[in-house]
View 1: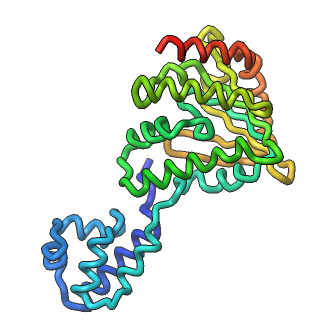
View 2 (view 1 turned 180 degrees about the horizontal axis):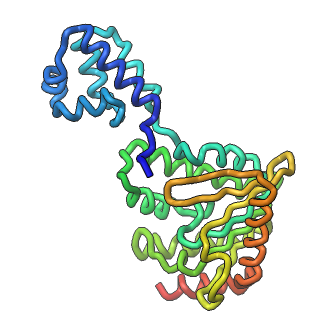
View 3 (view 1 turned 30 degrees about the horizontal axis):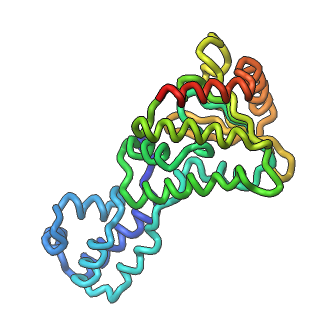
Length: 269
């Protein structure tokens, strides 16, 4: 599968740098020297493969006599809060009436502490720049307002035991995350269940499931992979996802037993 195309803002801004540079008769080597960076670094920015930095914009603006027009492009380079592939889903999630989630590998974003979110984004490949990472962390934490919204949103989370066995961010952060799961699970409109290894073969081994009900009472399913996200309202696909999620919940521990399971793990740290 080919790599996703760089954001349009990067490509347009890079193209503008190139146009202003050529109009002013400034070579790429001269711009690179003035900006204290490599020729390939400038070339990548002009091609839109790398996000133009404020420093390069400032140097290019002055060197090419752009009169502030290149620097003004900075406001269009603010990092996206969410990956492009997930933005449609988050628009619906923000207004959801109810949400059901099963996760076999990761703590769902709605349940992550800041330390967990940071550890996961630090491990992202290719690496995120610092600005994008901070924007993503704050956006992820901001999504959690759904859990305290009024009127309450009915939420069901089922976590495979493997999710709870991954000590993200070190021992202290790991324990904090487990206790946070207990805190969120104590909310009367939120259920947190554990699908233990002892459940054996089950539909949850096929991957994550997210279902939500929109304000128009339509039901949607989010189908995800490592680099793909697809939101669907197809009745057959949503029906299949609902059937699988129902079976997973039946195999999972009840909410009280799940809380005791998580508490024992926290107590062992």
